[in-house]
Image 1 (cartoon, rainbow, N blue to C red):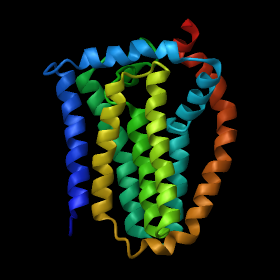
Image 2: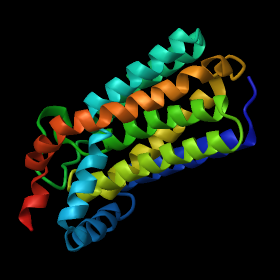
Image 3: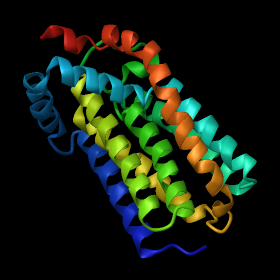
Image 4: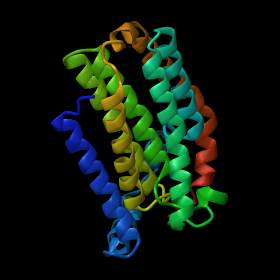
Length: 244
């Protein structure tokens, strides 16, 4: 198994990001001041149009929609007989939500908007939306880079990376998370994506190339339909938007 310098760098930076924020949450540096400074500035930025945009963006990170994206992606890999990648993605997609829940319960950090969710999800660190979105859309970015060489693959991968960042930003904007929660989620997902990139066998992925456009079209077509259901729920859920 060969690990490139880029992969070592990505793994190291992801680990430093997550560990640094976790240590801040433990009180080793003033993380709370950093979070509150940003969170307190958000209300002044809100508008009706931006509220709608962020509600739509955050819906792309909802667990229901991510499950759909995961099933479609793994199904396409199975159809393409990319068995190793299907198993690798399936294990990563299943394991990460469990890791997030364990961390939430262990750290038990309250959300900026109290009583937004119940049970384990009432805790804030790390952001499940940010972590799982970055992992799943990041995996699609890796797949796109492997099956679409050069510019097309890079553009698709960049779009998925931007989407993951936007979802993380939306969680802070909507009052669902502190900024450090989402940054920690991106770091955790980055670490898992580096492991995936090390383990997957690129030689088999070109066989899946013909299915990737189908996956992208299906996800794009399904989202407006999902938004019809999710948007009214989200308007009621994110009470931080109602306080303006």
